[in-house]
Amino acid sequence: MAATAKAEVFLENVGSDICCPFFDSKGTLHFILKDAGEIYELKNGSEMKLVHTTSGEATGAGFDANGMIYCTDLAHTAVLVAQPEEHKQDVVVAVYEHKPLRGPNSVAVKSTGEIFFTDGGPFGSTGLHNPAGSVFMISGGIAGQILRPISLEQLAYPSGIALDPSGTIL
Figure: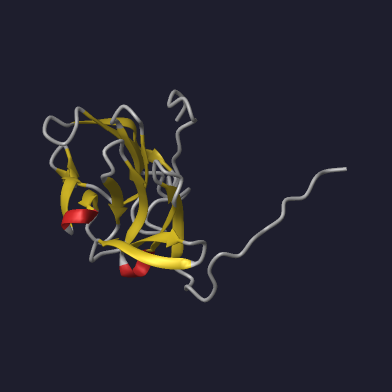
């Protein structure tokens, strides 16, 4: 007989646009309210603390080893980096080979600094009818970044990405 997992509710009535749960290096749960472009930290098991707002439509986020938040945002059609303590953000990448990205929507940050993200555009713009989504890797840090396609314009709406704990399997 299969074991069943117990579900626990931490927040209620947050809204239907809650997405992208992710953790910082201390194990604190964070999440996004997509339509508001807001990134929250879950404090004391049930309190929401606003950490950053992209002023856009954030869809994915993750921390690097220095506590910076890398975030995908459909409204900005870019990968952003946020410095929550300084209340600022910068665009990391918004174009590839002089063409704007479709709309990055998920991100995974490797402990060594590489950033992987999907670029599928708004829901419905890519899919089986138009398999033109991509997966990219950013290496070299913000200052000397190199953007490389892992799979270029051949995926049907790539919308989730993760690394295994060792960071060797994408």
